[in-house]
Image 1 (cartoon, rainbow over the protein chains, first blue to last red):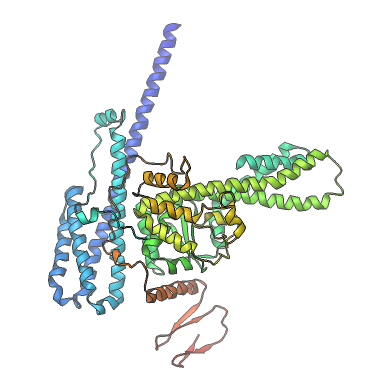
Image 2 (tube, rainbow over the protein chains, first blue to last red):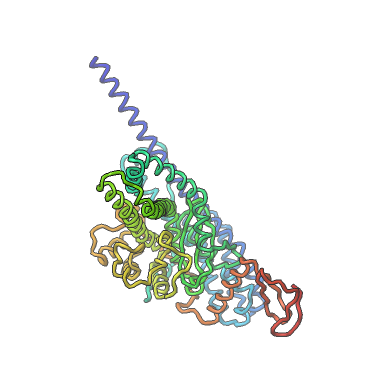
Length: 188
Length: 381
């Protein structure tokens, strides 16, 4: 009788233990997929930006003949970013350089009133601005997801399960530009 | 909310057929029917009662882009539908039954008055309502509230008519019944309001986290609250769904702010957002406690630990070109743009004249031809 009860308790404990592991495992998988999905979002937007730049070049070419260097910098940065196949970190670097060249292109464009009146240019400017924002927000969401996933991975007993099932590591999409690191200015 | 509804219906049953269960049964049937209606077409009914028109990206690219940006920032699975309401008062709301089938609506006045960053703050707030599933909760509680108000309205009226003929029951039952009829709607409303106020704060905190720029929403709230137009298409039940209470211009209700308003005081919300030292939930909580002197904040326990602002809203690379105060020509252009949308969706017919004038005809227009007011050329409709 006593032995029976003990076995029952043992079986129950084992079942609870297995269920617990399944739960933690599934939650980790869900978080991991969220990270992957978030990364895919960034890639969609990065691709969108690559596709927009040739249009932009076509539009500004006629107006900005004296700004060869600026235009070439954008084209080159785009090529480097597109061919960058490394991890999140090196990709982030290449993309930040591209953002920088675009920034200076739009700054220079301020000096060309004809260009600023061009409807096509204005539409492209809004399109690039929103893509730029979308990249930032996708990156922000990706980083939040990575942070969530990493925290979940590190706490006990999850870390044991992570060791057993070999969950992969993700790095954040970091910013290297010091200027970007600063908090947005608060005005009132 | 449900308990109040059940008590309310039992009281009704008790009075009419001296049977609590019967009243409860009717209540449950009514509630299920209402919930089904709400689930399948509540958002559509709400949108059409507000006179909202669905738009596409071509109609207002900036609005569409901002919504898409916030969709990405909030990690929503699907892009919500976007609607514009033909009202001058600036306001916005979100509705729908799930993050997969949600809608965001903004008024024409909002689009004209706000700049991009402020619009982003407002949209982020609405997206937070969607992401937190507030939209479904508000739809349901709103439906229950609507049912209670409706029932008590009908019953109070019929009660007056049958007073002389009804001789049954002791006096105390009648008192109980009347009490339930009168207090039911009030209690339901108070609970409804408490729920909605709490969710407003939470949505503000989320908006700050999504945009990483609390001042955008704060500035938008300032602009919205300084407006003096009242929204014609809002009523007591739908008011709670807007970003700022659309029915606010009553000296009395302003004083009763804490209990009877659908929204926390806008000034308070602005103060909290402005006081945020950082853009995560933790600093929202700190700011909330400092401003309201309450020990518990609506975001307590909702914090996702460790999610700090690894990335501030750097974005702004190109969009920093947006000035705080927009020049008049930009405003006029936005006016035109929004009005064109309204005309388009109200089935106006456009004819472009060679002189650059755009002639607009209402659908009721019966004439065959029209002279252009500028170059006098005759066009056929």
